[in-house]
Amino acid sequence: MGSTSDVSFRMRSVRRENTTPEIKVRKALHRLGYRFRLHDKSLPGSPDIVLKKFKTVIFVHGCFWHRHPMCKYTTFPKTRIEFWSKKFDANIIRDNLNTGKLTNMGWNVLIIWECQTKDPSFLDQLLLTLRPIEKTSNG
Ligand SMILES: [Zn+2]
Image 1 (cartoon, rainbow, N blue to C red):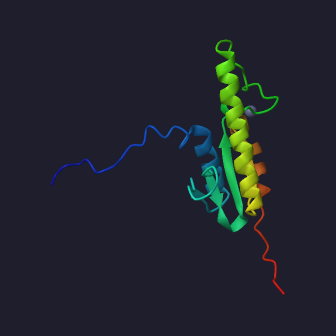
Image 2: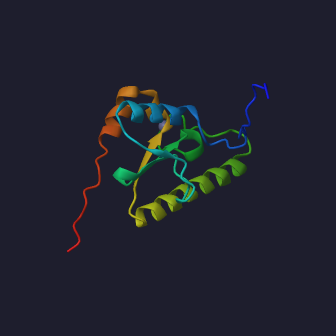
């Protein structure tokens, strides 16, 4: 007893989680009063943010890694071109696959790009387009 250190595991190796753009999106969601869960591993691609009530998942994508079309941050490395092409293609294919699976499961998939998180008012506008799923009456 008396030790101030608690038992915690720092998951440094999990590089995709808790990135700055993602934290910006979370803070905006909080501010707007949304309730959500994080990194649901039971869903395809383990979406960064899950808004169950809205039947919506949010992926916060880095422009570079996920190849945001026509974005100034989507640069292409000048060396090892083949290596990077393969890597980027694999990311895009995986993203599309996960989006397809989620859509088939009835989820609304929202992609928020890193560059969009740099503008708080744009981010708010984007998030305010979310609407709760209306219950359809069966029968
Ligand atoms: Zn971008």
